[in-house]
Length: 253
Image (spheres, rainbow, N blue to C red):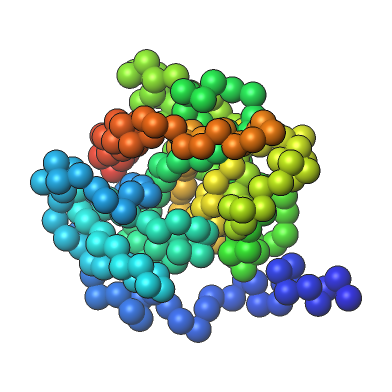
């Protein structure tokens, strides 16, 4: 009976899908662009877009998000929320020739760390669905340590305060219960979000590098939700610029 549970059924897991991103896309990248920065911002600032050229529209259901090349150096990708959409975007970027993916997004704080610090993700707890179509069942999926080390070095140079650790990726924003939070904390999670495990699994299956940086937009480990930070848009804009500079550096390596 257990083998019949769809999410952990492993039949055909090593096979490629019948639908290929390469069949849909007609936008191969110049060979010198091998790094993508994925951010979660439906309203990028005009200042940020000044150095961008349009690449293509990513379509995820009713969401259509433009994707860009930044300063002829990296792909600046804008992802919808949720693992399936983010994973689909990663598939398309890899099909274009991307070799390294760095993601930066917001999360909820559930662990014991300063909410003003950033989290460089070492592992993601796979409490979502998409990753099980790419990798055998496991509690965690790893990020790429070499790519994460480049992020750490970059943050150290800029005196940006961060920690390294585990995030909990969930599909169910409105089912982050006290019991589940307690369990995920026992498993080492400091943060909760909705995409990391999915993106990491796609990159692992495709044998590409993936790393993730998280900042905290809210706190969910107490009895009542904190609500979103009033300064989260400012924090987002600041860290996005830091991560763009990092991605440009990574692409030059």
